[in-house]
Length: 137
View (tube, rainbow, N blue to C red):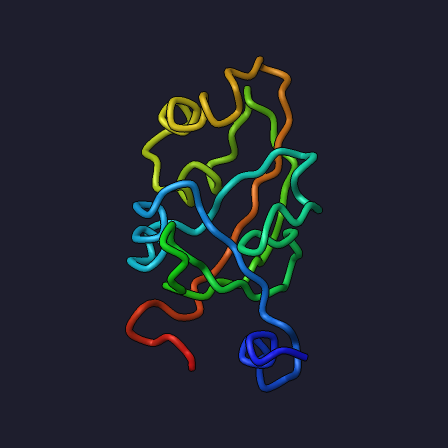
């Protein structure tokens, strides 16, 4: 096991996973406690995109990295839900720090490549375990 892998282990022996978001402003929202949800394409949920984006797993703890690859927070995924574009759950749009389902759609229209009403995607919900000031070693 490498030093890096060892340092990502929790005291319970569970390897910490990694995740990034499309913009550092989203990381700031997580640190402030405003953002408690995000989304992924159905086909991307179980995919390890790169060294900083592991597959999404309910119950797993993820170290959140900003665009400069600095660890900024840790989150735990508490749930996932398949959603439709024409029926955005309130928990999702509020967890994304939006004021309405329409604002959520405007914020995510390009990310999902201008989807139609029946488009399905995954919402995942998380709790922030630590932010910048309380980062574990």
